Image 1: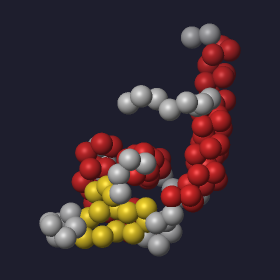
Image 2 (image 1 turned 30 degrees about the vertical axis):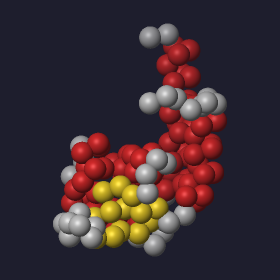
Image 3 (image 1 turned 120 degrees about the horizontal axis):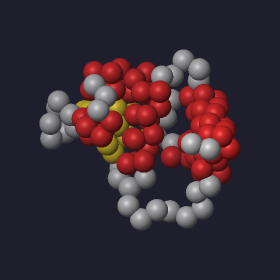
Image 4 (image 1 turned 180 degrees about the vertical axis):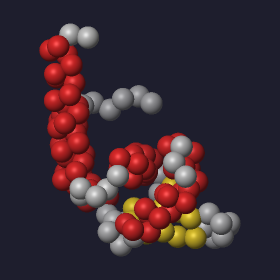
Length: 118
């Protein structure tokens, strides 16, 4: 790998991590940030996401996800027991605008100007 490409890649990664640490704090693990990001991405297109869905997508244990979600309750999310299945916990975003500024900074760092067609 070319030295210039390696340097640019690491520079962008450092910028990304700086934004994430600024937004989520120094004590938040990468796993938590991964789970939050996976949840936010899905909440762009749906009202709620379950802990089980996030566990499936990320490969992270449901127990850890539940613990992290409980830590964030009131911060920007609420956990609701699903009416149809009491074992299912829905994660519902309270304030969609709260994450806007960090996401805009990340988009700038990544050079995202148009939505991808997923």
